[in-house]
Image (cartoon, rainbow over all chains, first blue to last red):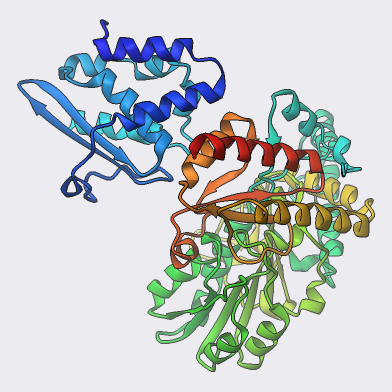
Length: 136
Length: 401
């Protein structure tokens, strides 16, 4: 599947990252680029449970395309959310359903962040995203 | 100065973890296992598994002998007067649930159950749900800033309506010993039963249940260097006699007909179905191993490392300890830094610590926190483990700040 320009850029920078420190710095940079979420969207219904930090995920569908917004109070998780959104933004349901997101994070060298253990939020975010998309 | 653990080599997983560049500092969650336990499991499975208490054949007799041998070892470890006071369960959680169901008939609407504000969910939720079922009042004993149950308030709150006191011996979040002696004596004077959650306490010192004078004492094998899937419930003889049977099935029954049955007393009456045989045998082997160690040397080692941990944390800017930990573990938060971020960066550097609410959400909320990092020690931990943790913490903080 073809990558957006932003997703290609993310892939390139993470592929070049050497070591955990550089990856962490990149994650924080990407986190800073995450579009802020309005307080009115930070509702219980939009909460992603199963994370150790506060995470919200909002999904909207316009003309068959999905648009997501997300926020977290943890910095590195914000980076992971940004990397997730950059991959899924604007996709139609069928393409989203066919997308292998764990492969995407593996390409970025971040596969370990997908662990279903409680201390990590990304796994719960992906489950919530799948749930939001399949409900509509 | 380097402080080695003389027992480190007895735990093969520590070296294996180190080869994977992992520093294990999460022993309060579960511990690594001694070679003696691995040998016992392998011997049991390698020489012929059999069910216990049922068969007349030789493998069955040997398994039963080993299984009941473990019951004696647990009784000796806790200084219980009689091994029939030891019930094997599937964990501390299942032991506490057994109590909450087995004692349910003793409660009437309006009765009170007292628990401390620092309980692990395992020693809170069974009582909370019992309170819902029977319209009881759950009384929460407040905790002071140091992390101990406030004795003055607790003695006021435990009164003639209190039918049961359930309390941790050692906090899994704050690392603080609770003032059990005055609390248990007061509860008894008020006619209340007492339940001590020894899940953490049993690991960090030897306790004499007769001296403690509690009605019930509960712990989990896997936190005491034993296998998982095994819990222990000790009860005073008179207290065990109060329990109603709660799970029904094989071997807990005396006589069964289609419409009626009669049941065995403790311990077997509370061990319905096939018990975790290998696990119980393994726990016995672990206790043999632990009994062979110099208990004073272990305590001194743990105390020195713990001091090192607490000082190192206190020395770092912005680090706030939860309570005033006395042994085994320390939980902390860092001003202006999300604990999930620190946890993430420690994980990246191969430091295995626990982040989050530590199965004590109400306590964390009471402290105004939504999480904390916990570093916890085992007898195999050494000062290099702590140094690697501190280096990783410093590196992580530098990056985040």
